Structures are given as structure tokens and as C-alpha cells.
Image (cartoon, rainbow, N blue to C red; front, top):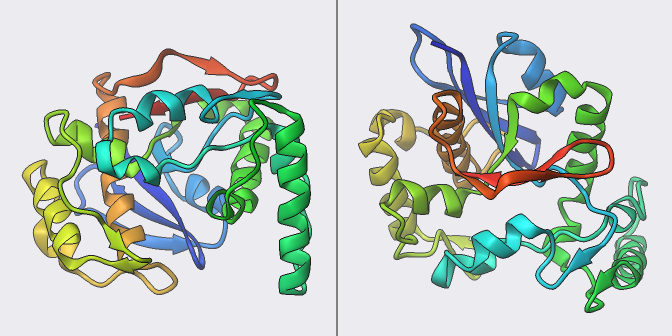
Length: 252
């Protein structure tokens, strides 16, 4: 048995749902992704809801994994953001002091994204909002390439679809930016049917993480378990790689 963890970004940094041999699943929040990696066993498998692998040029729909997964999700496909080129993701690395500077940086990233895509496409506000975490994970995997074999990218709605017999979830997780209780309950029941304790799933999210972040981390943990058992599915199959060797694939 190996330690497995599911990780999602959250307001305080990263939230992880962790299953270690012989202990109940637990959740924790860390300021950096490296903190989570370093607290786990050396052979732990981690699935994370964050893009890994940044191409120098993108085609219609973003990176290849996003194009492949999005078409399978029906009404849930809007949850899959199009991630642009490496140059666009690294366009602005500062701590933004004003809202105006944040929007200016978004415009610059969009300009670079349009120059490095065909057809030309800018950057959505939602995708831009996670660029700092994409860079954090990207730098970690470049600095520590030995982690590439056990840290894999996933996506919650793609994972839920896999668990749901290949059918997208019927209800949205959020409506107009707010958590949809019925959609959350639908996902909790599905996770419970795959071994997650319902009391754990119903517990409050750790401080610094939202309810949906907590549930997504729990879903990512099941992907990590599937990957550890050789059961996970890769989009594309086989995975691609960027020029630094970081894999480009969404696993479910």
C-alpha cells in the first residue's frame, strides 16, 4: 500500500486529502505545494487539480488534454479552462499591489497568449487567476524531476465523470459563483460509493479552503489511488511533454 493524496488550490495555498496506510483519510492546508510533497512518504502518489506542462504554442481549445476532456463533460465542460503558452503564464510574476495592475497584467498575458496560439486566443480571467499556482508547480517539477512519475494532473469534473460510469455529473457544483448544495451532495454520494467516509466528506473544510476545494481534493485522492494501482486513464494516451520534460496529460 502506498500513501496517496489529492490536492487542489485554495485561498490559503493548497488543500490536500491524504490517505496513509493504516490511518483514516484526513485533510490539511499548506502554504506551498512543496510542503505537501515533503510531508508525505517518498513514494506517495499525488493527483492535483492544476495544469502541469506548458507548451510553447497552443491550438484551438488550449492544450491537448483540455480539448480531449472538455468534449466529454457536456454541461460541465465550462469548468475546463484553456491554459495558454508558457510565455503567457510567465508574463507577470509580481505580487499585484492594485486591482489596476492586476488587470494590466492580465491584458499583457492575453497579448502574449494571442501571439502564441492559432487561432489567436487571449486568457480568461479564471485561468489568469491560477497562473501563480501553475508557475509554482511548474518550477517544482523542473527543479525536482524525480517527482514527475508520481505527481499527476487531473480535473475534478473529469474525475467525477470517470467515477460516474462515464457520465458527466447531472448537477453543477456552483451556480453563479456560489456553491450548489444539491450538486455537492451528488458528488459526496458518488465519492462515498468509492470508499470515502461520508462523515469525512461532510466535515467542515480546513481553514483557508472552501467547501468545493475540499470535495475536489477528495476526488483527486481517488485519482491518485487509481494511478497507483495502474487503473487511471490518460488524456491523451500516451501523455505528451513540454520542452522541460514535464508531462502534459489529464488523468482520471
